[in-house]
Length: 254
Image 1 (cartoon, one colour):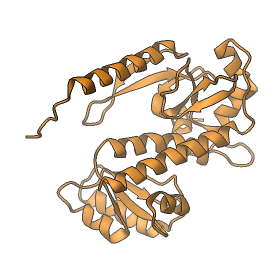
Image 2 (image 1 turned 180 degrees about the vertical axis):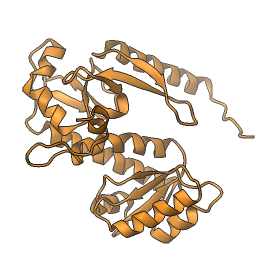
Image 3 (image 1 turned 60 degrees about the vertical axis):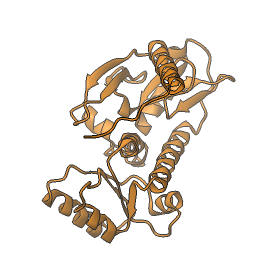
């Protein structure tokens, strides 16, 4: 039986305050908030929002929240915690460009706003940085294993990984072997491959990081959440504007 940690009165009060602030942001956000049950075992809830560019309602792991900054600039809110009325856009580079072209931010904010010319690049950098930070936390917390052989052994462990991390520019052979080993063991393991070898190496303080794995827990779920959004900015864009393979774009069947 798992032991439950007892919260102090101060911790409980702080958590209630955070929850109240979160609910307040949800009420203020453009597009409203609905909840739906996820199909995963933890029965956590995924909020749905309306994209200001397409009008489509989608899960929040496929959208990016934006707010108007103090100077009237449009600011990406990757963590969803910045104050202000939130505006949500599908996590897809081409859809974000569409929002800018349609002046959707100003219409949603009902005010004159300034949209940075490199807004899509800023979102991509922030998402990658957020994932790198979580990978570093996972390593320091002992929730991450590095290297092909160590990952392979972890798949046979009592608590197998929830998540395989593969360098975007790594060789496909090792990736196939690890995925095949997980499947052969009947494991429910996600694979994230939206970060490059250089980005993984920087996040984990090691050279030439290609394979890693993260144990089950909140950090693994956050990495899965952010990877779906980052793919919208790394897997879209052929030079001629044709559709790529981002999760949001696949769901829209375009």
